[in-house]
Length: 543
Image (tube, rainbow, N blue to C red; front, side, top):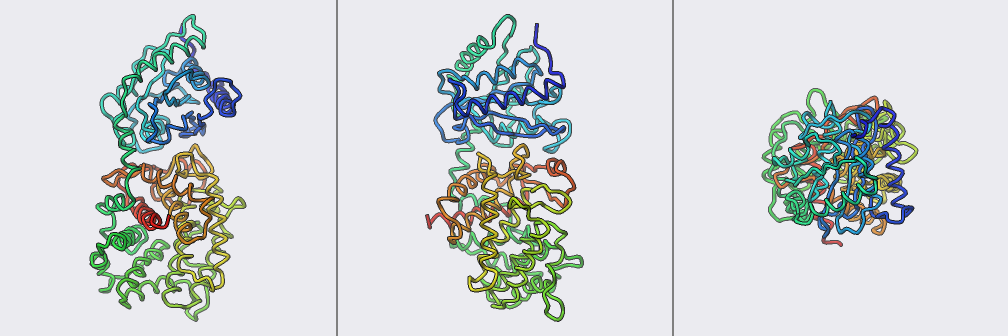
């Protein structure tokens, strides 16, 4: 008879046992175990349980030589398929396959098979399927195998066979491996499964999805930047940071490839020279940081009106009598404000030579750190919740990297800011995912691998390497791995994978888990991608 469906207690205990077995395998406690298998969390259920995958380390590099097979267990809701997947990983036998497995897609409820999953990721009734679907796309195996011990049709195989492309990466062949557990030992099932997997994989070529990932990570930074430029950096309806950073990215691209974009960016920014209010009737921190584009234009054109605009934002840090305010306004207690305030203050300070801007930048940094810097070196997003949101850490990293670029070494506060950046980046490096990305919640690997935080942190590290603030032996490999993660998530048409939507202060960890992960074009993600791709291009000639 078929094995029983999971009871709630089984759902809770069995995945934990499998994770323990995989950990022992990685430590060599099983004589035939493959030590290169990594235990990765790939998602979190609505009830808060991590969804685990055991991934062959080689499978994280799309350019490796082995055929990559991903086994998906648990879609049938039966103990046997999950136990068998764990057995395959503990002892993969003599095979040249790079074998990975999702041990149990639904660790705490009965399976809900629906592929491709509907609705925005990651939430609703399809949350587990959404995590699996995008994980499959970003892993880009050569074959996906639905391991089943029932006779039900495989929605996963059907979706892949019909040409659906997980995470928009490319097509992946699929198969269903059906095994009857009647009268067979687990060892017998393991041997039978390996034989049939070998037969399935023998005729495989690289999947279209894997070829697409290979092409993505092989691009030169300037090629990536030019692809991004087609979609981002062509408007400035309001002087806020998202379009401003994209325009700065285009200016930097012009510096790199010799095809100046200054006149076009001036055309786009023109209304603000003609009297349009750059701060608006209800200014925000986003407006303050958006004025960085005017500072960039001033330095390229020498037009005083651009400096006046940049200064109008930086001067918000001072009282009418010139005294320093306790902090820059509009911070909303959020760690984002380290970027929103410090970068524009330091830039205007360097341009004008006035030390008061650096004093204000240091005061603002200390104010924000008192609110949000945790003892472990990460930033909580706000005092409402302790969670270290990914972009809530990307902002301080980006902001201090930009500020230090403009901060003369002889100005008071330089060493303090440098020490702050180094300490933060060391704290972040501890949480870099094996894929190179950082997570939506930095210290929670079951949260999704988030694009903008990875791009911003990668920018800060690369800028630190370029300027000698960071030791290459400590951070160069971190930067390289992060760049690969960014590249893998940028399609040639400038669509992006897993950009967290606009996020204000949240009051719980779950709220950060549930923020929509955008798949497609996104102005915020595009702006950050232009920054890191141009920064990478600046860095490469120095290596």
